Length: 488
Image (cartoon, rainbow, N blue to C red; front, side, top):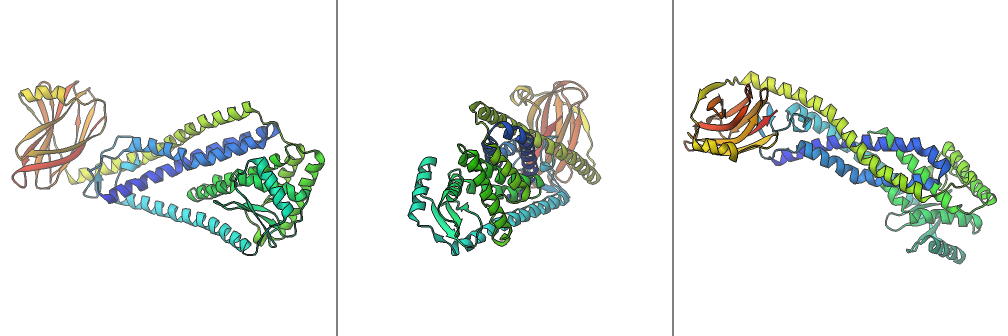
């Protein structure tokens, strides 16, 4: 197979994986949406938050690998047999391999156009979001100063020790932001409004942002941007991103208020509402990872959750949710892949029918029969070349100009079909391909212009030898033959 064919195969594989992975991720997210109210009423939001983090990681690696492995096993190409024949390229594939293994100029052009549209959309969506946030943080950083207040550093060190944060988190003050946020993929830091003074309110906000740093939420937000870019064509993924950002805030609120009374909860909620109002008046610098909710509905839900108190966090519920996710996610991925292939196979069958029409219009292959006495080599080859299972078999053989060779032995039943697609390196070569049964009856079809495509219909159950016989070599010496055999 040429390098360009490898690239086309990779493009085709990506085009099957994308809808499969996207559909599976959407199904997992929609199920979590159904369970949201139930989980939030009885248990801490932290359970749902952890499951969403697991879904993000599953989206980026295991889900893709599962789908890719299944797709590759189903559509594994027969390397080295792609050669153009008229408008079509013949390649070995099972009947359910799908569009990945049907190669046609028009179909290839459409696939390439779709791939480049997806790639352009992916880069545009991801880079637009990433650069927008990067430039916003860069602008904020340029007008920020490090908060070196001794009391603040003491409180920060105490919270870091309480939360188990080993690295030192830098804290900055900025005059153009309305609420604090955390930033930095490799070196996390926290930005606070410059009008914020030390006190209980500052402590609550500081602890909240340190929890974000501890849980590496900035990294997960970056992963979400990457997922939204890859699956920009799926609107469900954008809802997933919004929900993850919302529930990551709720999970941090739970941690900050895990032992707080109603009075402290009221102060916390009042502080968030004040910041929400300030952010609405400062939308030009409203960073996506802000401390408060992004819209009124999310802010309302957040206030209700803060005031009602945290739910239980039981080991049993956490383990049950983890096991369910571990079983459900691969199952949904497999089901999504099968669904994509159901559509894919229909397209493949239509393309295959079109292929047959093109070939039949250019060539007229006929069948001839004759009886031959079985040689000792034939008798031995019935066992030596026995084919196990029904599959597509790649053929790569060299025979003398007037020689022959048994290729494989197979047991066939009445109604089976043996489809062969062979071609030689030189179109002036002549050869024939035949099936010989255990009684010596041999059925042949002859090549035309160095090419042969024919289907042998089996009318009697028996053991058969598939053989190729050279008639004339263009160079007067030998014939190099490639092809595939399909048995169904």
